[in-house]
Length: 443
Image (cartoon, rainbow, N blue to C red; front, side):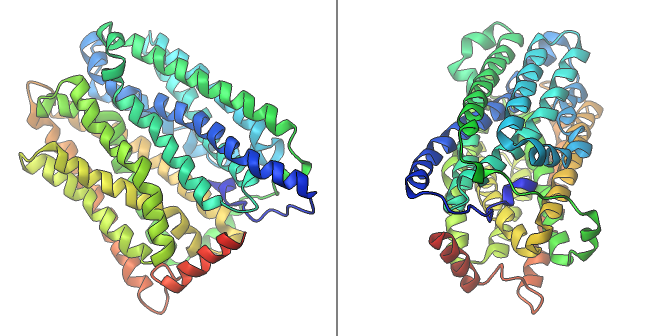
């Protein structure tokens, strides 16, 4: 996320005609960049719908299925900050093109899929490309919306990205013929959609090549010595960020559909539909909660409530026979509230000169959590013999995610308590929120 914060770049004096043309083009660029990221979100989430097919058709273990998403995150533990350096040097449009091509290659190798090592290599390449692609696209948005509208653009970008996740989850319904043919055709569909993302990146690079020179990115470097200057509030929200992502994505993007099939007796298309509603709700609700936070304040309180719903979701799933719609609503609200508030709130906890370091650190530790929790959940399922003949074998995974969710709740509660005191940073202040919104409106 390092380069997403370059909203204060000096635009210089541009002719009015050029400024008006760029103002009109930027919304088309938002749509283009959103298509680019949505296609790759689809490719990332394409594993969960085929998990049962990989298990029945190829004899994959739960650990192998977990590895396919864990390996996505492993290289970014070391490379998450390198992407920002490449973007600084070569520009976001060019890096977007390179990484979109790498993602397309990775999804193609995943679709070929045999031997297993080739599939893992494909997911590894996809992970290397996708993380930097996201940062590059955010940097591109920061350039095109530097004069104003950044908050709306970012919210819209992430909302449209969720369309890719939603489409992947319901693909067993609208692409049922492919799923009837086995595990490979759905993965080739993901590769084709990733190819559409590459096409969008090609257009972006071509358009950006003709963009005014004053849109070039500002130079920024990560300074690790700044880490010691972060106060306790930042560490609370960093822990929340890492734990929340480490619970939500491994469950929803790797194991949820398989769990709904084996433990809840759903068909593949029904399980995918239930899982998809979380992403579908986030498409519309995330910008709404972001708007509320900007106008009303109470960011720490909103994150506290949203985070509490996460362990409550696993309690409902594991300890009750309630309708799956209840757990889906709980997780959907949580996934809409927390991401809408956590990134702008993080920016309020550190000085602007150290925001790059802060977001880089969050990114690195997030990837550690994603990789570790995907592997841990798969191992727990294998150890307990989880499957259609042993639905109770999934209980250990549910406890694992529920406990992590509760720890995240403790962290955000400590943040909320701190923000109510004299050492707060204005997360709860409505006046601070109005001030920020006013600055955006005047931009």
